[in-house]
Image 1: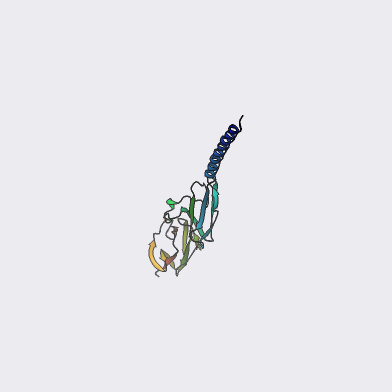
Image 2: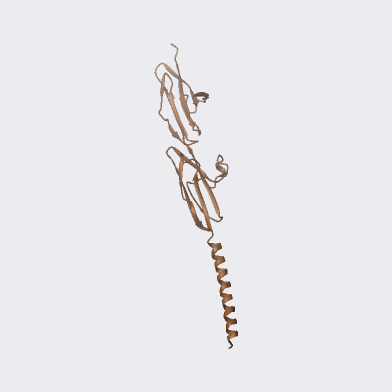
Length: 197
């Protein structure tokens, strides 16, 4: 076999090896695409997050939302989504797991503060002390007890220091009512009236 033929065979083999390596490198690069996952809290005073960083495409990611005291988690939202609409959240679980596919993902954890309910009694009676922080839609039983010489009149609701409405009475009886907590701080006062005679 001539030297020229040998060199030709070696050259062809080298080309085959180089082409194979190129395919492997290209395939490996595609599979090993780096994905950046950002996890942030919309309000760090209300809660914090764990997770985020750089991952390989196809990796499983776990993001964790940690509400602060007297706060609750609303949901994980893609950056720029309407945070006021919980139905648009990617997840409402504090621990959110997903598989990364794209080159950049930015998730925002949204938290809210529990509403504070204050229940007080006006002159002529007492109330059960159920004041405190509550999650929205929590049902709280309000109970008012008049002292001798007084009768229960109604429940009055105050928001930001101003009277807003009378809460309908008579759910269980005139002085007992189930109030569904909203997402704002309110004060509810039991009103009593003095009996004639």
